[in-house]
Length: 66
Image: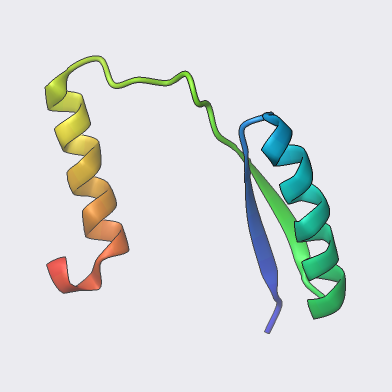
């Protein structure tokens, strides 16, 4: 089974440190790195949008909801 590490990046100072740590983990575990750019400035346009996204995240992250 191929091992993968997903690394979220928001281009902050902490992100730079996370990349170095993830690189070490990948080398130790013979895994590949995959980066996901996170836009920290994104905001839902309305409470309705926010509620929609929260329900979607809950559905996908919590198997008990299904």
